[in-house]
Amino acid sequence: MPGWLIPPAKKPEKSKGQFQAERTAKVQWLIEHDLLASERIKRALLTVPREDFIPDCYRDYAYEEVPLPLPGVEATVSCPHSYPLFYEPLGLDAGHQFLEVGLGSGYGAAVAREVVGDDGLVVSIEIDPETFVFAKKNLLKAGYHDVVLVQGDGGLGYPDLAPYDRIVVTAACAEIPVPLIDQLKSNGRLIAPVFEGESQVLVLLEKTDQGIRREAKCEVLYVPLRGRYGA
Ligand SMILES: C[S@@+](CC[C@H](N)C(=O)[O-])C[C@H]1O[C@@H](n2cnc3c(N)ncnc32)[C@H](O)[C@@H]1O
Image (cartoon, rainbow, N blue to C red; front, side):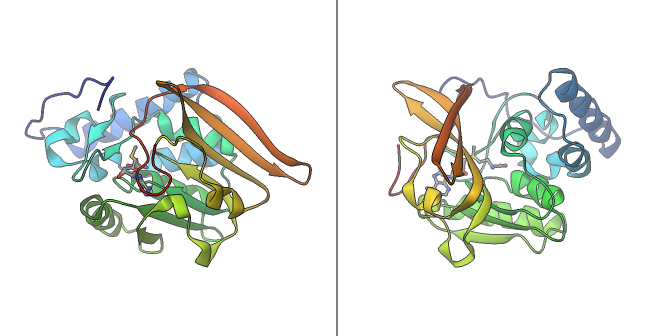
């Protein structure tokens, strides 16, 4: 992962209580850094045990601001602040039909499932078969049985359950894949890291009756999107 320093793999030692305290402190930190305001996202981050979505050898680093390697090719669980960074501008809320491209560990899908609640739906696509199996196991073990998990190229979206209120792409694209824009509802929003030369910018896109509104939020650093719309 260019640009990030990955901590050394080690035997996990922290207790459930320690993780719980770290999770609470992280949510407080996100609020103080103006990254987190929504009550539903706050509650979701407090509810999902992030450590249970991380390989054992990196588990103790669960709440550190660093992406951690996952089984598969170039797969990572994003750093903790990435989730409110993406979900807050999306305005992810109860009842939304939500599509995630890049399931990774399954953590982001679990957080989204807590946010959208029983009236919403989470669909998540992962291109790497090994990463997919890892995420599926994590989600089922944590009790998330109703997230729709798809193994394939997320750049193509998932037309069977479209249209979506909100779409997140968690890998960096050369351009936002057109099928994803097509599968967005009117007044729907999509967020994705997009390459600008060597760097990447987090782009928020809104589909309105007047056309597509596009806003660059900040610089970011994510693994590149693979597949037909790969970077
Ligand atoms: C930053 S990680 C995702 C983190 C994840 N949301 C989580 O919470 O752990 C990006 C993921 O996108 C996946 N990916 C890359 N290209 C993809 C594609 N075209 N379709 C679906 N997944 C893709 C990678 O294999 C990787 O698992």
